[in-house]
Image 1 (cartoon, rainbow, N blue to C red):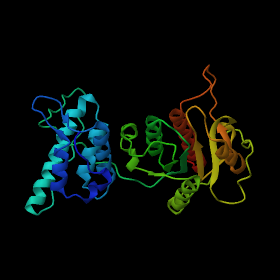
Image 2: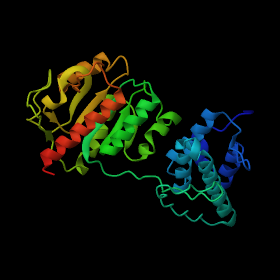
Image 3: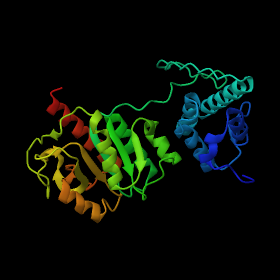
Image 4: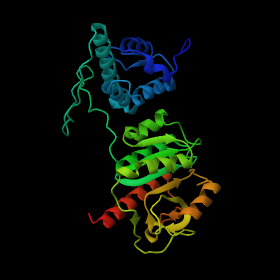
Length: 318
């Protein structure tokens, strides 16, 4: 890469033709060959993430950028072709002084059907839109270092319909290309932010008026979590930490809405946050009987959310 590059955050200031020129300097399509990057891979991923994450850009452009970020080797060429087609269409529309027409969504191919060639590849469905949460939970990620783990947690969070995910400064950037690939577009489905535990609590509290769910999830075996305070007197937000050595999930009467802290892959939840959780709600664990003493944090998050969804369904009678 030669010469200075525009900061990705400034892309929102560019019109379609200017963005077309910029992207043309970053990659090119080769007849009969793979797309050729003309810049650093990380910078290109940051540019795509900036396009995907900014609502000022057209939906089909944001979705095309997402497809390139998430494409595996087999789909990479067609994803780049689609991005180029969208860029071309918007640039031509601006030159004519009109808005670019939206591209039609492609139907999913049937099993065994041949994939479209790069020259005829149809665009995939539009990027998913954020929906109202169904599970009154916010996950707070405490110094989780792996972008893959962070992205997987966000994907699980979106799948179970929680309010959102807040990461602290020790976690990867939310526009990290590996995180976005692991999240598979789910960063746009739920709230995601970077901040403190207080910010996570405010995220949860802001969602409460839109939630119509019970505020208590009974335990299969009703005993309190270690160090837990009674949660039956007021309707607020509870705080839990998911950590080894806590009370098994099925033995805890979890009070919802709740913040749940997930910690570092090796070190776990940091001591100050662990102590705060002990005072405010409790420390919970996932019981397992195999030789390995711990679970991957992304796997643990999925198990936790599945447990909460099942318990909430049972408490709600559906």
